[in-house]
Length: 120
Figure (cartoon, rainbow, N blue to C red):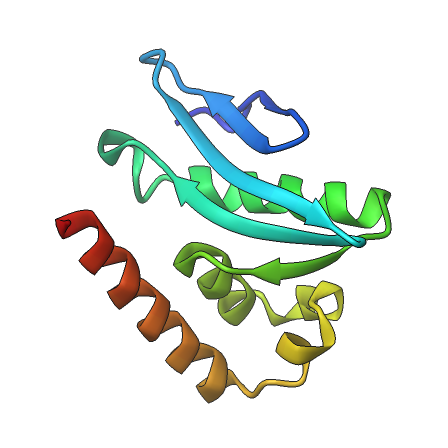
């Protein structure tokens, strides 16, 4: 995957159109100065190539620019803040004060919920 990935956003979605014309995205909403990261999706053929990471980096920059705090709701967004703790200062206080183990447990729980939802 090329390092040049054009990422755009609307008031509810951060997205990138990929070379095969598919889309990767993060759905979010902003409530009372908090950016809630609701869903992250990368098409299966593009997973493991850093696409979701680039979308998250964009989301973080958007949050900084707008002075928003971040609430990671979907499993990938939680995983991102586990892997890149240097960005945790952006998290809402409830998440910022959690230990690595607490965040990992939240990640596992959320991932299981998402998998169960996909089966429905």
